Amino acid sequence: MKKRNLAIAGLMGLAVLASACSSSSSSSTSASSASPSADAICAQVQAAKDSFNALVATDIPAEGTDTLATRFETFTTDLASLKTTSSSEFSTEFDAVQTSVDQLQTVVDNAGSAGVPTTAAQFLVGLGSLKTSADALFTAVDQTCGA
Image 1 (cartoon, rainbow, N blue to C red):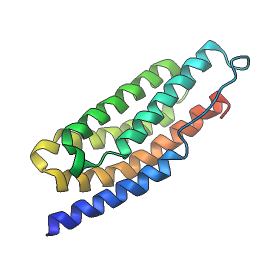
Image 2 (tube, rainbow, N blue to C red):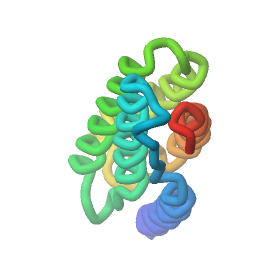
Image 3 (cartoon, rainbow, N blue to C red):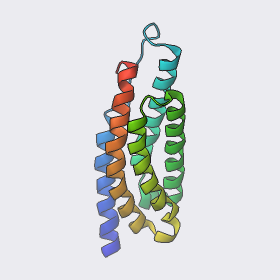
C-alpha cells in the first residue's frame, strides 16, 4: 500500500511539472532577422524543449523505466546538440543543467534495479532541480531567438 501511495504521489507531481513546462514550448523566429547561427540555435532549443516536455510527461508506472531511459537519453542528446550549436554562449546555464542531468542520470541508471515506485519518487525529486535549470537555459536561449 505504501508503494502504491508513493507511486501515485510521484505521478501527481509529474503531472504538475508537465503542465508547468508545457507553456514555454513554442517560439518563432523571423528568417529576415536571425542569422543562420541563430536559426540553428532556435531549432535546437525547440528540440530540447520538446524532449524535455516529453521527459517530464513520462508516466513511469504506466510506461515503465525503459521509456523513462529513452526519453532521458533523447533529452540529453538534444541538450548536447544545443550546447554544440550555441558554443560557449550559455555556459553558465549549461553547467547548471548538467549538474541536474548528472543527478538524474544516476536515477535512470538504477531504475531497473530500484523498481518503479522508488524510481518515480527519486526522479520527481531530481526533476524539480532540472526544471529550474532548464527553464533558465531555455529563457536565455529564447532571447537569442527573439521569443
